[in-house]
Length: 74
Image (cartoon, rainbow, N blue to C red; front, side, top):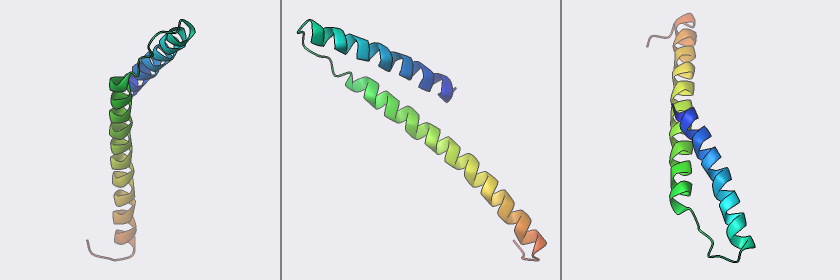
């Protein structure tokens, strides 16, 4: 789901870049698309959170396996 949102945000960013180019070409006031930047940042942070959680689960699973083999009680 987040990957789809990230892909859509990238598509919108490309469209926004095109709009800014047109605005510059025609000497119009250039839009900043602040909301888009906020959305992109939110998506990136959530993706990082989920990747970190998955990595944490993998590492703790390995830690428990090593602890069991070494005779360490958990």
